[in-house]
Amino acid sequence: MNEPIQHPGGDSRADAIAIFCLILIVVSTAVFWVSHQ
Image (cartoon, rainbow, N blue to C red; front, top):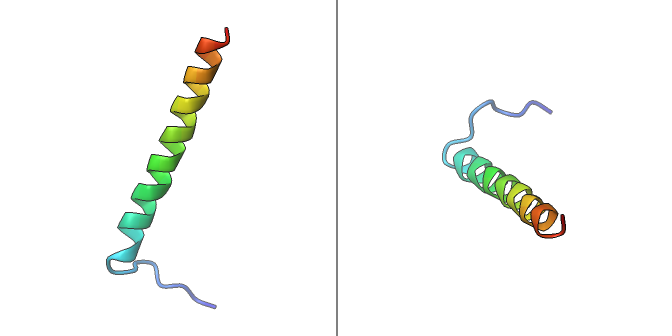
């Protein structure tokens, strides 16, 4: 199945949510690691 390279409207929000979740996980891990050091 061939996926179109650009989805109008959908991808930008999905990418933003994915990046936000990734940053949130990294920050949470950093805070946990520092607080339990």
